[in-house]
Length: 267
Image 1 (spheres, rainbow, N blue to C red):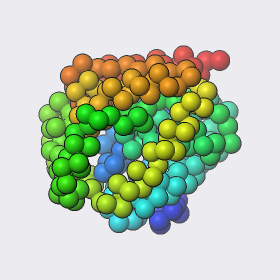
Image 2: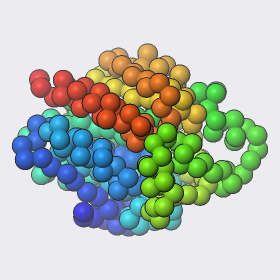
Image 3: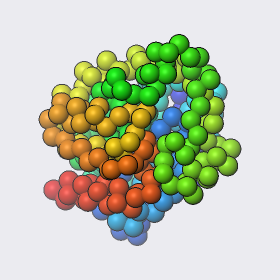
Image 4: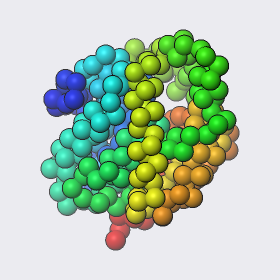
């Protein structure tokens, strides 16, 4: 593991590399998470021949910054672009796939859609994304009720059916277990119209991975996003919840991810 100086101090990152990588995946995690929660994902990708690079967002995991505070999504985008540049320096000739989960899907979408990279990636993979807000979202309903977002809590078992992973998260001091900051919600709200503006312009292959029982970012939103994108497909996994990359059937999810990525890096 290593670090660079980012938007709000030191940004922790890691990379996993097979003996002969065929492509480079740069991945961004969700709100409250950190890259240490994605070891099975990293193993699956390297096993399929992909080099993987990922960071802990500012205010997350081992990175500097007040916990889960996002004052501007542009801070995350600047760090994401820096990480991608570092990865590209190590792997200059490999096809590039950008990917993200939840908050990370927003980062990945804007990173590509707003032209913050010097190249067009071969593909984009978005898991548990909320690119098109859905009125049935449990979070939308809670906020509409007037509850203080700082009081919002979800047990990890509500976000995945995988009991081992849920317990791992409960016991993990690096995973945020608290509520949401108003500043963070405001920053994400300000990013929403930017996401809507770039969706029709994302002229690259896009895969949306989603759980049918995701109540934070309902699958209907992902299906609508797929309709808006020029070249996209959505794969919805029955009974899976929000943490689609750490679900009971995560091996199946990883297989869909790696097969899609492999198909689009061959050319």
